[in-house]
Image (cartoon, rainbow, N blue to C red):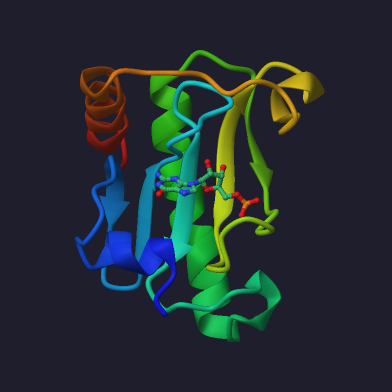
Length: 131
Ligand code: 5GP
């Protein structure tokens, strides 16, 4: 069965998309730790990030770099924190999270809530700032 992220890629499940190319997709995390919390995924469904073959693996991080710059241009923060967990969704993904402190990367914290209009607005703004 396809991962939930493959279903997003295929348009079977909606997502607030931030950037997309032939091989990669970035979209807002539905349970964000911060405004602009974004997931970056390869379109090829691979569970464990270190199982992604080399050219695609490097491309994923290059794509994430572009997206992170777009997030940083829009969301006030000190840096964009980068983490890979992958215990919930078996489709490799990089979390990009605007942070001021290590506390902002604590996944045990309560997640933020945004309306669909707010999510759409954040995604649009980030998207417009990706070069
Ligand atoms: P992880 O696998 O890295 O532990 O966590 C998976 C992440 O994906 C979580 O932060 C969760 O909020 C996010 N997530 C799970 N299902 C969906 C979904 O259907 N849409 C979006 N946009 N994010 C999701």
